[in-house]
Image (cartoon, rainbow, N blue to C red; front, side, top):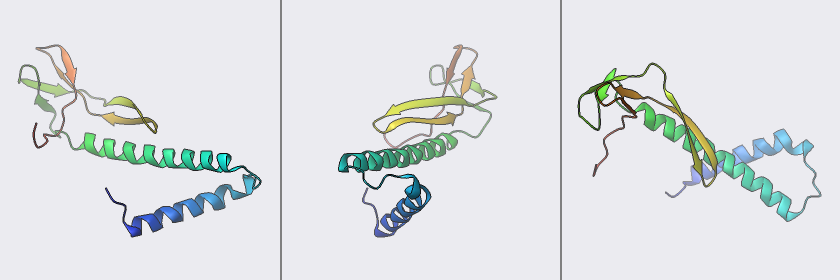
Length: 120
């Protein structure tokens, strides 16, 4: 995905806001390695936030009904009352989100219904 010029401008605004917020607390006599480490930490935090938002949105697109078909037996399964906290290790760090969970009493198995995708 190519980042548009408008998005690049908005990201630069975020960087400037970050610098204004934390600039007074930073040592301006830092090495390039320290500056790079800070930039990587900032980029990782941005990447984690983007992934968490995308995964939460994707999880929310699953079946809205209080039931879904069990992937094993294809019978109705009921939604669990609480979503399941999910945690994923990524190249940019841990990303967490809440995902709806269903339970099939016949198979005695919980599962996460997903949105059908092209090719699945």
